[in-house]
Length: 130
Image 1 (cartoon, rainbow, N blue to C red):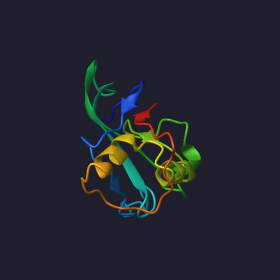
Image 2 (tube, rainbow, N blue to C red):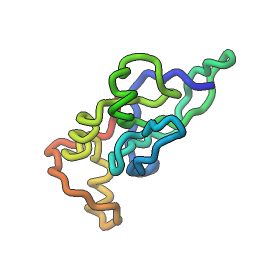
Image 3 (cartoon, rainbow, N blue to C red):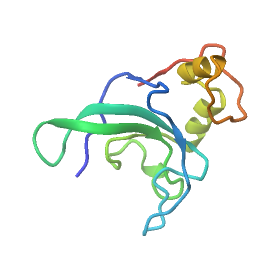
């Protein structure tokens, strides 16, 4: 049972905090979120079409890398449970330059504490994932 990946533009805000992959493997030796430390972008609860029965439901939409050995070669095909899967190199680029971090940058500037990471901030950070 899974959802189809919803189409649209999705806000990336501190209301749904990102996290870092633990790099753990499932029983088949697959790292669903990719290597340890890679960022998982949380885009919140979204309406999406269910594949197991007619209609829509609510799913937690995430954008993340995936297992480089087994699943990254399958990007562009139906493989996930509705999340937006991207190559690890793209994930690293978005994270390093803070391309989707406008809301996180504002929170940091207003003295809210977030996990620090070595990055080069984009001069025009955004907050929308497509």
